[in-house]
Length: 286
Length: 324
Image 1 (cartoon, each protein chain N blue to C red):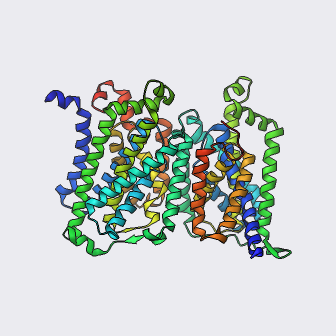
Image 2: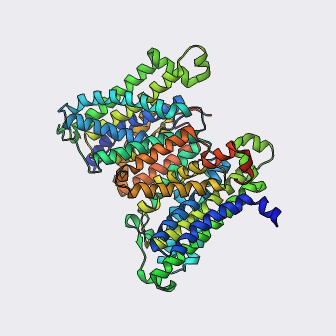
Image 3: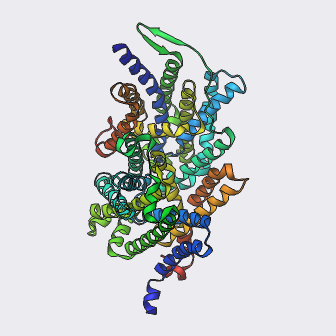
């Protein structure tokens, strides 16, 4: 009993790191430019397919393919920003919600036609590691480590690099940043690119242990919303903790009740936190 | 009389468009045309209802399909398990959706902008997940009507006809409600909330009450449409009742026609459904239907955010009194 509990707890925690990365992409974009990116889920799915085809088609090892996928995600995000978001960045939120949803429809439409909806999986067998009496799947452990590295990398980038400082300046006050010479359009494009990069990496990591289709992104997008709200929208560090909380919930709930109750709990929690603490569990008062 | 006719010109125009769509299959007598008209009319009814909240009040509900699904489930349950008639089921569907909106509204209408939109998505998913687990409503497999239910309405054929006439009546009703709200003092308060909620409050609009009634009004007809739709469908399950993309399609229809106008959602819903029909049957576009709708949506959002009716109103001052 204790063993089973420990095992689900660890499984959930490891998964939580990956969820956290996905949510970080969503919440970075929200925090910097006040845009809820409704194409997030399909971008996660594209990350899965990118790693899959680089591996199956070109024989590149999935973890190397992940680096390429991250780069592709960055470029793709910047392109999406200039085509779909830039023109409506100052319009009411309905415009950006719909613009990003339009991108979502295009990706899913073309994706369904090209990739079909047959489930795929990446045949990567790395076995598992024995820790005392518990067993950990290696791919999940590596995924959690990569996710942590990416999170730390993002933190350092935002804190110390020049573009990172620009991003923080635009977050605080876009007008003031423009006055002192920050190129805000480029900064917003870079932010959208980074958000997409995070989505693509999380998708690629998930693909190493779960089967997927082009439509698989939607459920991860919804999880990202829940996590983003748990950790505070616009707070990338909070997202990582939010991801861990969600991971633990997903790991432990099945011990107490049927698995199908998990989404009920998650979304009720989501709405309640929006109502009671819209800045997230770790956010201050408004 | 002619003065009155002119005063409400835009109402007559909107009602006429709905009536033409409703009478067209009766004129041709083709059952397939009737199916098409049913789809178009239910799209109009849903889009016009949502427009009361989204277009007039400025609150973006991304999960509005929850009222369609919830009303559908309650209506279906009353027919299937309690043996109620279709009329009572319609009433139950509408009232339960309205009640749900009232209770939800007390909580989530305090949220503004994107937070409200997020909360509505969360609620749709929560209700879907809950019903997935709710035994009396059949859980994940849903419920199926016993075929003999249709006997009370003169067999399945006649029941289908009856359902269509009710759909026409519901669409006319929602058009009337939409026009009444748009031109009433209550509606003026909603428009004020859309422009600036704090200013509206200062000017004497009791915003929490006004918003909540707008929410309830926008939920009742979708609940009735849901009850009707699933009675016609004969079976109901969570995946059919709460599809997130239907919520967004409603918004697309409103945007296409012009948010905040009475005629806009009618034109938008009709146009969208016709386009989708065309894309679905054309072999070239069948697989890319979703992608093309996406391109269309993006073009509207980027270049004509007011929609067709809004654009006409802005471009030609003379048509403004004819097109609300």
